[in-house]
Image 1 (cartoon, rainbow, N blue to C red):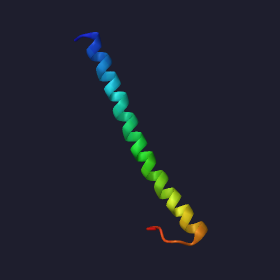
Image 2 (image 1 turned 135 degrees about the vertical axis):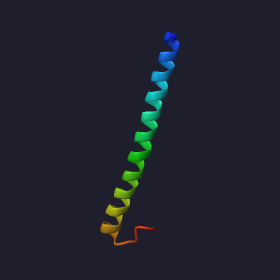
Image 3 (image 1 turned 90 degrees about the horizontal axis):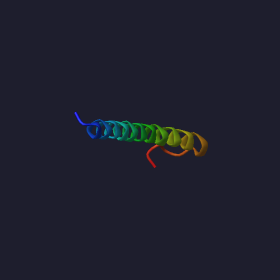
Image 4 (image 1 turned 180 degrees about the vertical axis):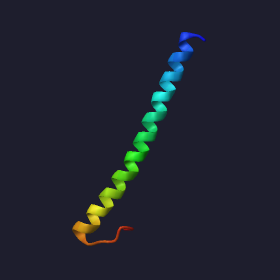
Amino acid sequence: MNILTYIAIAIGGIVAVGSTLSITLGIFGTIIYKIIRSAKYKISLFD
């Protein structure tokens, strides 16, 4: 296979891992933020 193919595969893999990590961290960050906010201000998790 061509070297450009390997470079394209590597870049695609890095982008895929990066997007997966950002989505996962964003979800957990939102959940933690909502729990802290509900404990601090005594409001619902769903507001």
